[in-house]
Image (tube, rainbow, N blue to C red; front, side, top):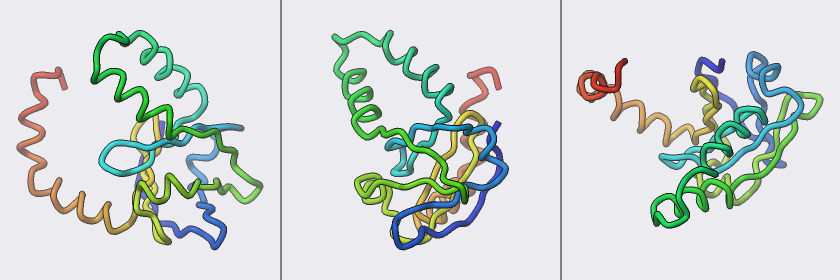
Length: 143
């Protein structure tokens, strides 16, 4: 399980160091893609397979389902950790997430999210103000 928040910077080649605590669970390979809220999602290969199988069951006749699957899969690429524990962030994904240099890597249970530091700080400020309200609204989900 992925937990925590880590501040990192991209190197000149667009590589990002993945926190040591996350590397073992990522294993040999992973999939990185556009995420929601203009962050990047990084999935271990086995978690990507679980998600892929669920998305395959969505009906092709539903416009929203087609759009979501296109969005997720068209931005996806396989990546591997190098010997220093870094992954290459493709330019199109860096542009989507607005990541120039400083990034925040967060653990979100079964996936890792990669944010531009500025967007993450803005998101956290907004979320802190509405955290209690959000908690109340998700009570119906059985949490």
